[in-house]
Image (cartoon, rainbow, N blue to C red; front, side):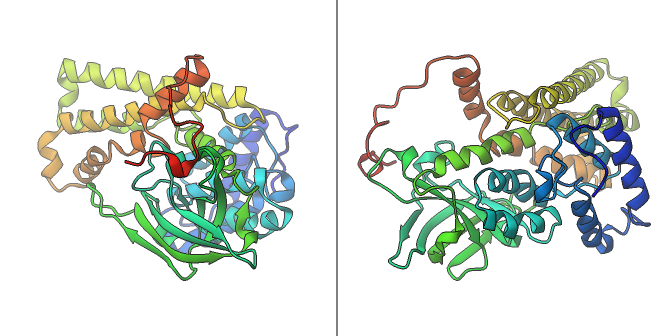
Amino acid sequence: MIDIDPSTSLAEVAARARAWIEENLPSGWPVDRARLEADWYVLLGDSGLATPTWPREHGGLGVAADAAALIADELARHDAGRPMTDFPGVALGGPTIIAWGTDEQKERFLRPLATARERWCQLFSEPGAGSDLASLSTRAVQQEDGSWRISGQKVWSSFAHISDFGLLMARTNQDVPKHRGITYFLLDMRLPGVDARPLKQLNGAAEFNEVFLDDVVVPDSARLGPVDEGWRVGITTLMAERSGLSGRPGVGPALTDALARRAREVGAWDDAAQRDRLVEAHVAEKVLQMTTIRAFVELGTREPGAEGSIRKIAHSDLEERVARLGAEIDPFGLVAGTADAAEATHEFLSAKILSIAGGTSEIQRNIIGERVLGLPRETDPHVDKPFRERPRG
């Protein structure tokens, strides 16, 4: 494990992380990434740099969020961090298991997560429960032997078709209000009855899935946290997700830098109006980067809170703005067939993803209003009704 701990100064954290990465990164990286990445991720996981905020006894470094941000920035500079396919497990699953898991669950799941031996997905949203997640209707019924029989459908589950495990919320009690009858499970995606079906997206990718659960039987050891208290467990996951989707924790080249280069190449930089919009987007991106650094510094060792919704909205808006600018700068290039044009087309067609993933921007604004600004909650006339008595549809 790398020689970084909570007592290491921030400047030294960055220096040691940079030196370790440059010394250990395999020769040929990232050109030959496909062949080298499995061994690299094991080495990275063993060093603690892949999961720096995790406790040292679970393979992390035990450092605060500000130090972790510097490590993430160094990994990004070297293109050496874990891919987005590992985000649900490392950023969401790990912290949730650390907060709520038994010793046996931590022992079983955390090291394979840290070393990229197992991939995870998130099984929260349903066709009838998206923004109002607590309305989920996937059922888990406990059997006489203590196991659980789970049936239902999930949707928009990123990477479910290539995942080993899923973070699953299911209803276990219909006789209490909707938030109080949910239980959280760590679902083995290879069990009989689990059917993940990729959904073709507008941008041509198929990372999202609908997942059908047909009488899937899981042991009680797969339950994370107390029975009927899964909403509280899920909030840990959701807060980590919003923080993780709120932008890069470092100041440096990013979306708008590539956009400006493209504008100069095609001559759009000579248009004063286009140039102004590019500069405005560039300033917004730098403000978001610096705000994210400040948030990580102030976060310290506590879990992310509602303030992460502010940064997530800013990041979502920036992604949409950059995607639109990319199309405006070179509209004919979108169909020209070049590599740059293909990337711009993909970004344009993907622009709305972040404003939906991890809770829509509308939901984030509700969270900010209620938990940051102290505004009254929206009235729900059915808030105290048992779930089975709530109107559907």
